[in-house]
Amino acid sequence: QVQLVESGGGLVQPGGSLRLSCAASGSIFSIFDMGWYRQGPGKQRELLATISNSGRTNYADSVKGRFTISRDNAKNTVYLQVNSLKPEDTAVYYCNADILTSLISRNLFWGRGTQVTVSS
Image (cartoon, rainbow, N blue to C red; front, top):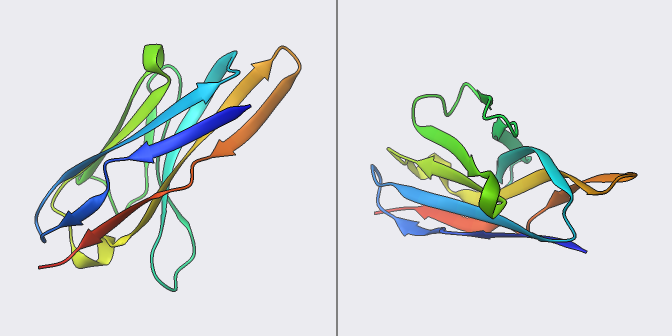
């Protein structure tokens, strides 16, 4: 069993910042790519950023320069620093991770999400 648990969301004013965390736990042999997505009201889930286990990052154009993804491999945790938040950033933020749970089993796991609301 593997669980991904996000934290760090909340209500923030426009221009504010948050640091989201996502910790993976359970039967983990190795973690490959980890990523952050979001789904706003009435919108499809969109990719924000990914990071490989060597630290290589990729970002959606919409968040480049405002969001920063990082990870702590020792803690099986991925972070998303979100700055200069706008009301349109309001969404549920999800993490995922490509995890090897044994030498012959590899799956993509998702967290349940953390709500970020940007409002004055």
